[in-house]
Image 1 (cartoon, helix red, strand yellow):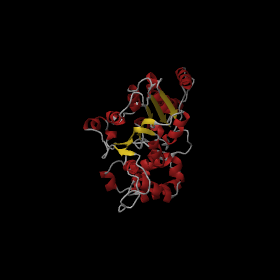
Image 2 (cartoon, one colour):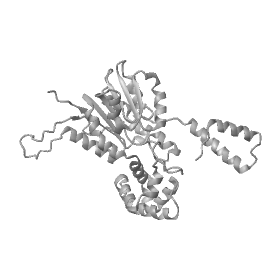
Image 3 (cartoon, helix red, strand yellow):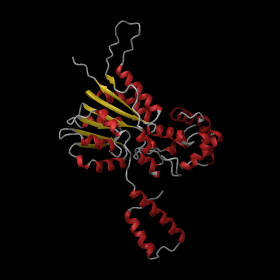
Image 4 (cartoon, helix red, strand yellow):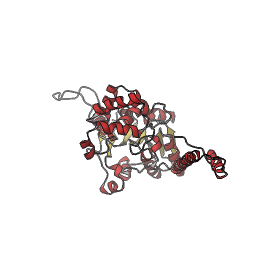
Length: 357
């Protein structure tokens, strides 16, 4: 989709009103472009913060503490954290989405004396903190998955409810998009991706249909992909389940943005940078993420690998703390009624305990 700058929009409007553009089809095309530009410019980065009160309570915020929001988004959670910080407190917000950075900067303006915002992936959290001269923090928050803004802004290509170009990049600086995956992965690669990241039992047939369709012409849009997926799933199943494309879209998004790898490879390092009694709170939205968080938290609490018959531990692995949430915290009835997107959310919390020598 071509988008106009404000100057181009003004120039066109002037030309249109003075009849310098005479072709009716051209007028219609430009009117559509103006509508798209207005819709885009009026759209704000809005994301309903999931389990806001539960997150703030779980972090047990100290007024003089240092906190990191690794998935800053529209700063819904961060603004509440910043409110509770005193003059010596500090908040570092990290996000890879440029539009999120702009929105968060505006929202956190009243607290700019205690807030630092960095455009990056939370995978680089340790490096970001090192560059800021910070060795330990009192709390970390990760709100994983896609924001409401990213879903609702069709141009970002995450939605399966509108026909738009395949994109799904959380960081728009990267060149690879969902289109590359759909059109360039082998049938076997597509199958494994949809099966492992989408947990779709029709993964094999979906992959087969994608490969067959792209031999006729490249798959360019979400609408094209949805029709291909529908054709691969029995009509009876489509009638009873959720949206047929939901799992495949999730799989492509996870693959493109390396979501599970980033979480798996960096979570323990984030626990290591917590100060004594510091907490990390993580909101997940599907079983794949939740399983990773649950297992790593459990391992950090009980890292011993000695055989159970050993009377004492000889492996030398020490616990890094304790799991605060034996069962995940889930949204209450009121939140579920107000925000249907919260229904799959789970909050898990871990507290760091540093052994004193």
